[in-house]
View 1 (cartoon, one colour):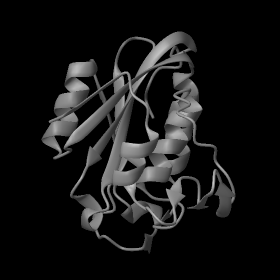
View 2 (cartoon, one colour):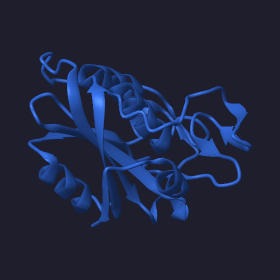
View 3 (cartoon, rainbow, N blue to C red):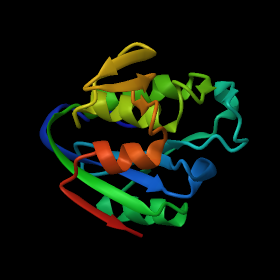
View 4 (cartoon, rainbow, N blue to C red):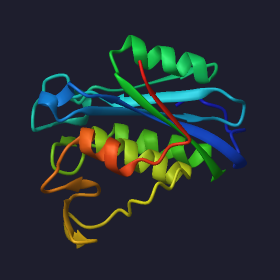
Length: 176
């Protein structure tokens, strides 16, 4: 990552979670962006271009790109075929922690059960301070009368489409 170390914690920042509803065999596919202290946005996703259930980190299609502002972030994701977005304004953000977590997850192997696009977005934005209410836990756990696989996948309603619709609170949302 070549982003500046001057991205110190700030009181308020923002982030996006974006969705391709028809991605991953209609289960959906998510990406995200988070705001740096200078107003730029770091956009990222794990695309898994081979569609495999698991693969090495080098083959999982992780990418990131820094853009100048919110409008450019939306245009980037629109150009990559995403269909929906949720914009979150959050307090006590730490862009440096998000950059560190993004670098870490980019090196982790892909696994459809617990290291996929949804987990990667959750991990970066959770550490970035978005805090939209999902707690990371062990691979199988029960919470609020629901069973989860990995960090965020519900057993009976798996996939990014459901996660995006049911669990991501937003200050603003829309479609492309």
